[in-house]
Length: 91
Image 1: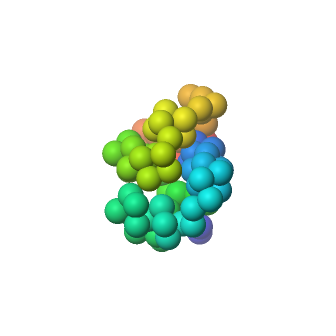
Image 2: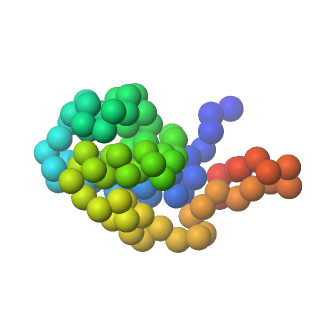
């Protein structure tokens, strides 16, 4: 069964995509400037993957924005919920 993106991953992905488009950069350009594979940039933008904090900083730097701007509007309710065994599941 395909993974359902968490609300947080989708929200951050929309922020990354919006900032990339505002900077008039392609996904490949962001990948080259950040040192992150373009397939990962695509996964982040679509909410299929959640970037780590260091990755968010690298993406923000490539976009010429503050890393915190990629988290604007994020709420605790958007974060994945952990199962009793510690595995995360989409909220």
